[in-house]
Length: 158
Image 1 (cartoon, rainbow, N blue to C red):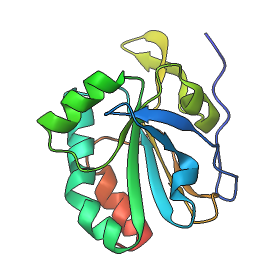
Image 2: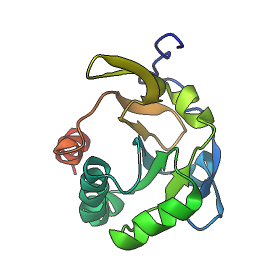
Image 3: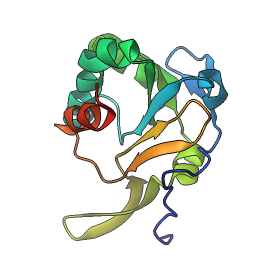
Image 4: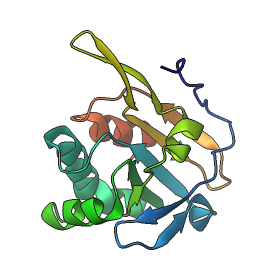
């Protein structure tokens, strides 16, 4: 088991990533240069809590986009599973596959978790707002799946 991951803080440079999306296309953080982007990490596609969170982002995407904010979700799922998740829940933003946990480690979202007394490594549900210059504007770790997007919108004034 590894130690707790290093956490990012506002003002830090957002770690670059290049990941496959649900269609097998390549998405890079650099693709969003010049605009704000919400990058959120979630444990597993097609699970109830992750679906609730993704649907909250889906339902808020129009108001976020009107404020110049894009959204991407990142999980350890393979692109094919992400495609099924996107289709099933009519998700309208990119879902990215981080099967090797590289982006998760860079953002401090892969590490020890405790569930019913058992410690294991997994995704720490977290959300980041990256500003137009590629810096962390907000770093929110251990967020709840439900109600989180409403709190994020309030924080962003959207």
